[in-house]
Image (cartoon, rainbow, N blue to C red; front, top):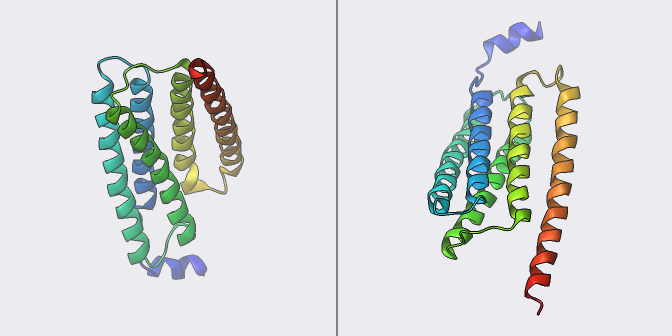
Length: 176
């Protein structure tokens, strides 16, 4: 009976397509960041790519938030949709801020710790894309979603340790 009633109500079918599009900008940004961290003469070009992907992500985020406001029924709680959208957007925003600083200071060479952070960013983005793809069947995929969440949390911890090691190495290098 509830299914019949729900079929009469207007619904928004595009949320999952928008989530996929948003996650795609995240992995594109992470891959461009990894290219930036390889260093060399192509750094400005890859930084610009990150900026471009960040603008694409902003456009998708605006579309998601507009869809939340205009939709009567959403696939899950509105605040969770906003939270997911903001988290995806914050991730690529951080990449864009990194690219901005690299461009501003014309950095062309990066320490091994930074290159490893780029690899972690790509791995985390790849896992995020997979997780977002599982959202349409969240209950059925709950086990895999939990695994992915744990892997992403471990990657965050690994990146924190790499960041600290990199900062220590930088301090030691310039301590003299």
